[in-house]
Image (cartoon, rainbow, N blue to C red; front, side, top):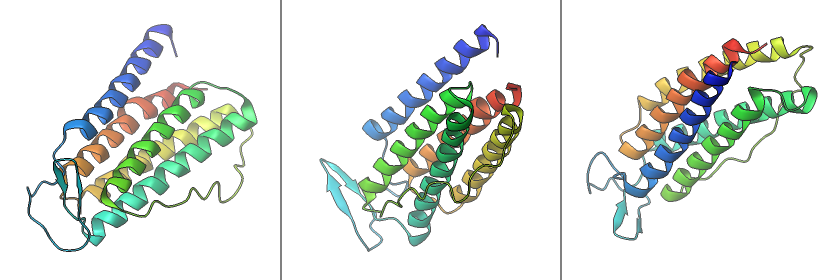
Length: 180
């Protein structure tokens, strides 16, 4: 990756992290206003947190598990090949994604799944193979968010999923496509 693209990628990552912070500071909690649908609800300051549907809870948990999977995979590559770009940069972004999703789950009282670690060791011999795994993982990640968003009515969750999908497609995927 040339120096100009590296700076662009870093700037994009910083922008994405800033946007995630702004979502939690100012976003409305429900696309349905103050309407309550039963179940758990809580109040944070003056913002009323409306309960999630079972599908939204499951989507949030699945998103967390997906981000754990990417984090664990990219960390395994670093453990095997050293502090290799883009893995060293993307692993930090994946940790930020996990953190955002965990805070969102905690906001709604959703049980946060435990990071299961890698279910089996990576069988790769080269960084190029690892990059191909990164490409596949980011495409699968983006596809998952498309599916998860179908059941989401809370605007803040939808926006986080949209931002994470965008990071996968517009920053992580191009980085893995260009790595060797």
